[in-house]
Image (cartoon, rainbow, N blue to C red; front, side, top):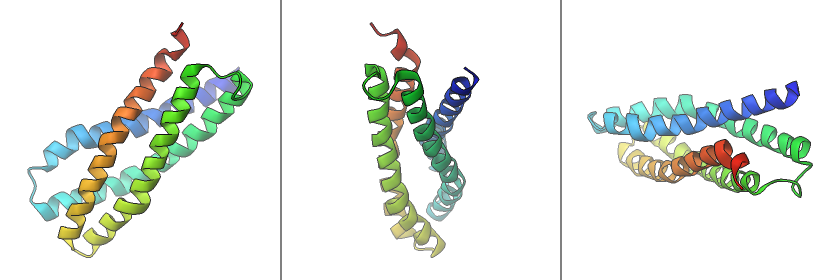
Length: 154
C-alpha cells in the first residue's frame, strides 16, 4: 500500500510542478515581462526556461514512470484501466510530445539566439514557445481535472 501512495504522491507532485510552472509562465510572467525592453525580456525568458525545463524533464520522467507503474499494479495493465486513466494517458503523451518538440526545436534555437545576442531570431522562437505552452497548459489543466474526478465518473 505504501508503494502506491508513494508513486501517486510523486505523480501528483510532478503534475503540479509542470502544469503550475506553465500557468505561472504564461499567465503571470508573460504579462509582467511585457514591460521590459526586448533584449531584457528575452534574457529573462532565457533564464526562466533554463531553470524550469530541467524540472519539466524530471516531471515527464516521473509522470510516465509512476503512471505506467500504477497502471500495471493497480489496474492490471491496459485492459483493466478505466476511461479516465486512458484519457489521462492520451493527453499526457500529447503533452510530452509537445514538450519534446518545444525543447528540441524552438527552445534550443531560442537559447542559441539569445546567447549570440541575435534578438530578432530569439523573438521568433519565443513566439513559438508561447504557442506550444498555450496548447499544453489547457491540456495539463484538463488532465488534472480528469485525474482528480475520474474515479467518481459513472
